[in-house]
Image (cartoon, rainbow over all chains, first blue to last red; front, side, top):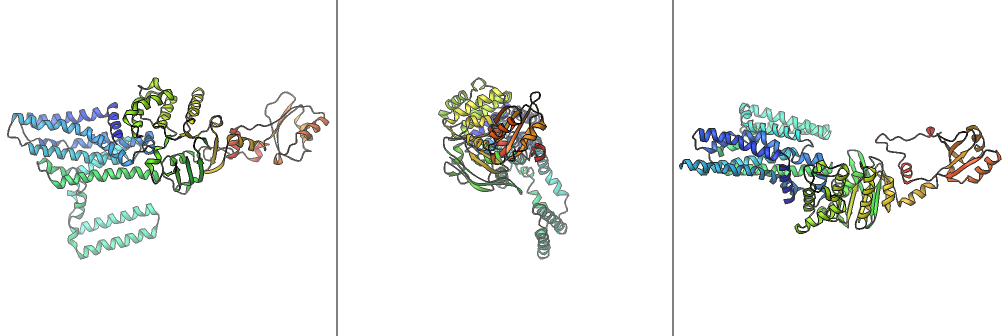
Length: 288
Length: 326
């Protein structure tokens, strides 16, 4: 694992990409820091961090796009998969390498609150640092998602575009769900439609009309029966489900200086899920 | 030792590898021959654990690669068709990385890397970026990767593809050198290479084994049914009228170019019956001077083409029809 980790870091710095990532991130963050905290004479650093989360949408795809797609394209995955290292170690090595790169940025910005403290003793360091912890976790979650998307393709460009789209969706999810109707009836209709789509997808995968129709009938039946028995269950169901994917919204608590266990667990789960999916994606390739 | 038992790989309904079984004994250099699309690379990818077989087992030194991949993979070094190189690393950096993932201990690492670099003759490029190397050097860096940690088996997928003649010969020397200490399984299109370095040849086509034998035996076996080449000072019609009387001749192929006033031809007989004496006397009686007569010596290349049905069907190769021969 350590070998993969070192190689990844080395590659980030033999190509420009590592430097571009670090410098771009720090420059933009620095500008925001200057305007809101220094020129704006505000001691609230967590707020500043909350304002720059849009950077992830631009920068995380750039740093994660090559991580597995490029191995697939260069056929160097043949070396990794035929050497006596497990796929799990390969993927964790890669993930930790990007995390370290990102951690370097977080380390630099960790000094900013101390800098502010130097000018004003009444600044709450604890809330600033809970903001930084959240910022770090949010970044790691995006890295895991980007890495997974990179494992789906051989092309860095496609990986970057996919990550970009997915990250934008997670970013604007609260806005999207806000537009959805939240009463029980419309939720039932949405669930019913989604279930039909699932059945169509299962048909295209299995090419079995009977099973798909059966699935559709029983599924739809269950949806409406449950609605008849307990309509309360459907209240803003879709909104709740979709909000689970709004990775960025979870960060709001941190910007208020609240260190919530829920959100920490949420980010750690996102990381574990997507690292696991990446491992599965690479393993799956051996069998098709 | 590599034991391959009833190996099958299906892509959808198409079987790329269809029930292959063979054994690569320790200390041997085994050539793996077949036209493009025969399933060579697929088989090698399965032996090295890169892809999983649909059915069947692969044992490396008695260890099933499906049950205990990390132990089995330790004993195998693999150079795939495209050498798995990172263009943005330097040669030494790359080989250090390979040594590390193959489990070479830290204290032995730089010594082993240096040793292997000098064996495959890449010391002079050790500080260059892999991106800037020529094809021949890249191939040798790939070979260094396969040799790393001195596995007992080395599997090479078309190691000399895309090399110039000088480099090809050098590669052959390196493979011969490897064979002293390692068991080598090697696929190639270049028959001279196979006959120069291999003790045993496995010929496959369309995912099935056609023959397993020594290169010499394969050629000998094919030679019993080879043609008889004649050069006669006569016209085509004269020669035809005489040779028509020998009923054992099943096929005749005329040379396209021959000396003036002469005709060259290749005769094929039923079951390889020897007709040399009769041809001689009959031509002499007809006063048609026989200028030369010789048995066609098949090279391994020709034997290979015959065994695999005259080229690959999958990639534009075409079967010669009976009618085209005459």
